Length: 308
Image (cartoon, rainbow, N blue to C red; front, side):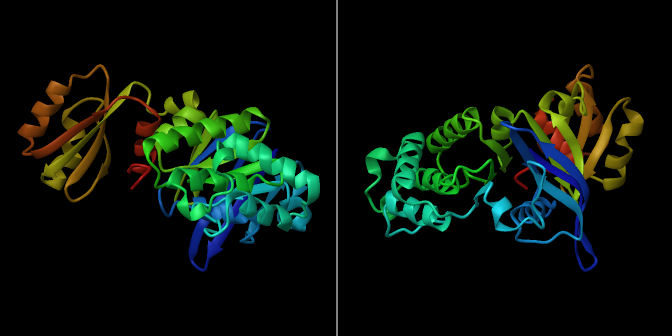
């Protein structure tokens, strides 16, 4: 389906994307995760044709996305993080506008609009001005606009930002239905639980490089049976760095002014670890423990949480 090979994009001395490669298979929801500044947006803009990469290839159904022009790009649907709707128009008028840009008209666009309104649960509010919609409704209509031309690949960029939990649940259900109907989805999010619920495979990117790629089970093997221990408070940096020398299997992952992150095997007791912290002069404001998960893999690989 989508194949990216050795993609590189530089901005003067900064390599924003550094020879990354991955593929998205037909009909799957593929998660593309990374903290701010990781290279995620640059990659997406290259896929969309908004940026020209310095090297590498991007193909969709074996057709060149970089030099293929509008004909190839019509196979791609994009739902941006910012809602791209006309607030004074109603849902039908918005979908007619975006469909018209793709050359849809007559009975074809009327049928397509009705299917999307049913899919997104907006049929009963279809003739009401978008300015009266809730945030979740606008997000669902925004997604319908990106699908009006029946794309082969749908790129969803943070589609649930700024909506309440109930609306987010509805949105995730809609995304599952879209994938079940055969649309391939490239999904970016700041919510790790969304990736865990939706994505069959995913890639984690940071500093322009892919750090992990595979199924959730394959990626979780990176941390194995290790907990993540995050301590905030006051401590001596050199003592914090030397603590793994005093406790077998303890690994220092990252250290900041008032925060340090360690990895500790499940077999080790947290009581022993806490005792070691106190002996090393830690004044602890908070100690959080994360069981092995996709979230803990992300923190181990990048040194920070997805939403940082």
